[in-house]
Length: 287
Image 1 (spheres, rainbow, N blue to C red):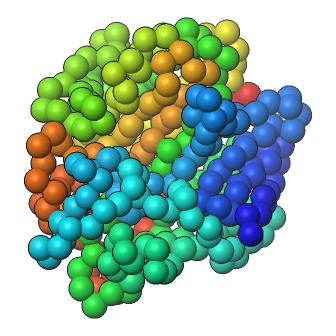
Image 2 (image 1 turned 120 degrees about the vertical axis):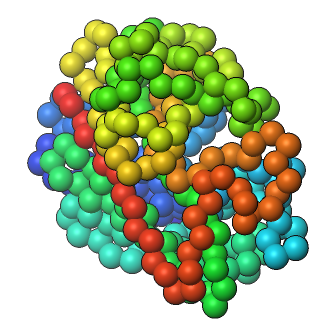
């Protein structure tokens, strides 16, 4: 059964759904300000889905492993499954998901996924803990997808810490092309407008920046997402919508015409038998 659980630290409260281990709220109690998109099924019905065991869409929603074809949903299945509560304290919570019949049909590995959230004042950490419990190597990609509430696209700015003019990979019908485009003003700033996401997400790889900041032109509210150590960054919204997702990724969607062999797919991490991988990012909320 789905549960709603909350953790607190200082003036902030963060809330989560056990279904999908999804962050659904970061609320500043003094100002009564909500930082997380509150979902609208007519626009985008999620808040901050967990992406696992693949990021993005695969060609024909399938991949090949050891010569066998497997079908899997876009962004994997974790976001659409019930997690258990592994541990909880006043300022932290750990969700857990393991192999079951549903996952095994799509992903033939004995895995354990823990999603650890910890709130420290105005900073929320999200950590992925992925264990390969199989006797074979396990291919995986994963990432966060938090959606942050904004007042209006024309009011929003995204600022890179140390990338003046990074190239964004181009998407074509949900798949990555070999073409890139410029999206900043040459000084590391994306001035968001109603048309920024007309061609879907902006995708960056191998950035120098340790963080990006979502700012408002009309208020002091900010969200600083630390992306240091993550190979890819996605920035996405629906055109004209009042949210922006800032998404640290280990992995990306298939390239156009990719032949589905997961062993040579860009962004895939291969975990050895019984290997454990931990990776985290943080979100810092300014009022």
